[in-house]
Length: 471
Image (tube, rainbow, N blue to C red; front, side, top):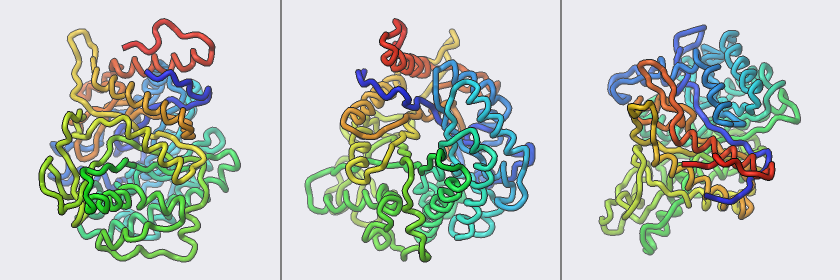
């Protein structure tokens, strides 16, 4: 285990999102979201599962906050359901929705836990989708109004705001591949336009948050990012690595930090540039306080002209000239089929620091799904996840030692939950949820993480508790 002593005020947390844990989708005035409609469409999700109940966090919020406190977390990243606050996406506010999030924030603060709120984690109000969704510029403008309403209510007691989560997924998987809501399977133009409006939503919301939340507000976006590795030394593979980096990483990083889209991106996607209006790129690239990184795996790619050994697979929207190497020798994989590659977190954090110079980095998601089960003694012995966390925290420590300005780390996820199109078939939680009864059981990985956090606190106190960082 790393001997790194992280900063005293480092945020040690876990994360969730509203649609994945709250349930209560038809209660207390909440409107419908695109995920309600998507999940209700036959064939879209595993076994037709929906988030109607999920982990029932809406009714069990205080129990869940108490579990966070028991684990020693000093931060919790959650998302606010836009349709719970504004059932139609704009216009009439639902007081009960804001009341719930105010109660959550107050409960967190009462336990000494820093709230970190994500304003958009994929649950676009269905009424806005029917008016064009993220392909329409008006959705970004409506998002800014929604952000202002939330910050006016909660900004006096919390200061960490993530505007949008993984806009690549919302844009590409939602509007091109159709794997996520709203489930549109089309050419990449819709994804390109949606991606621009998600970035614009970030810029407009950041502006409003600063206006309403004042100088103490800390604002950033969370991106899913991947180190890209070459599968061979060929010239075509060198080009493939550059293409994959533009597609997976720079599509959203370059607008945020350089005020422009990467050269060649839209042509490679077979799309025209999005409808950029005067001032858009200045809004999108306005300085932020942190960058959120969601890290799960790397990609190994090669030129499509290479021979077809090693199980290379085309796809992921890359188009001609790019293949993904899938059967890496000796690769450990999670239940999602993702390669376990802790060193990629170190490389990613170092590269972001060197290339984009963000003032701070938050690891807003990092975790793994495995096949968990409860023993006869009522214990969940998830040794693979425990090892995953230990190795990734070691990688995080190495990045910090090399100067990466990391200020927090959030395990995905606090609870087993609704894993989007995978339904309830994949478990990521530190806490096991028995869905039939909603019983919670802290897994061995959760207890280990609690010990790790305790050991970090003990380092600052000058002593190490005997039971800290145990397996």
